[in-house]
Image 1 (spheres, rainbow, N blue to C red):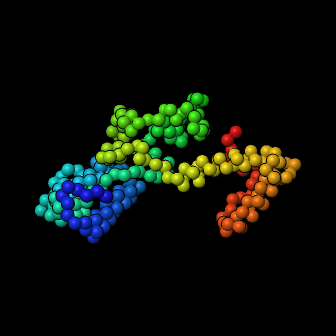
Image 2 (cartoon, rainbow, N blue to C red):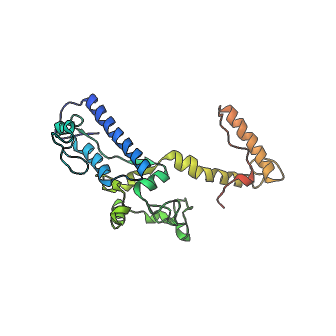
Length: 248
């Protein structure tokens, strides 16, 4: 949070009330979106604008002024500090990839040939192959700037643009896929089996056996010993070649 120019002593009660009011409003929008499949862009932007303004708004999300006869309780609050002069400042957007696709109306993501909204990584163009994860991968030289991202989406019809792009301070490089989904459920789910596949290709990692599955049995036994020693209760399934999704 950032202090507005109006100053004033911080009031934790007011701030807590303002935060929970905003939280409940956004939860209501989520419910409406789930029920009716609609969420007005102007409403979403309005909530962020109110938090940035440090004051109670004097009109509703459609621009209709509050009055003695129209939402009188809000009319009486008009112009007053929302959180004792403090404002909410956009910091970042974080979520799993599916969430970001839906929130930002992305047209480049995991189900497309152009898989990334930040660069030109591709499923079809070999020199920009999306599984290249090295520091010299060519797609690393094609990163978009925040300005380029906005220009790209500004050319789309309003119905295809996410209202999040109109939030003051929004930056695509402050939009993150959370680590648990991107690492534990994404990269590591492929990289670890691929490493295991290489290590059990020959009896070179101390795991004996004439066949790969025999060597995987020895690796599994070592893994179970490690889990017991480190009090890990939730173990992976027994290693088997047919269960591995690997990078070849």
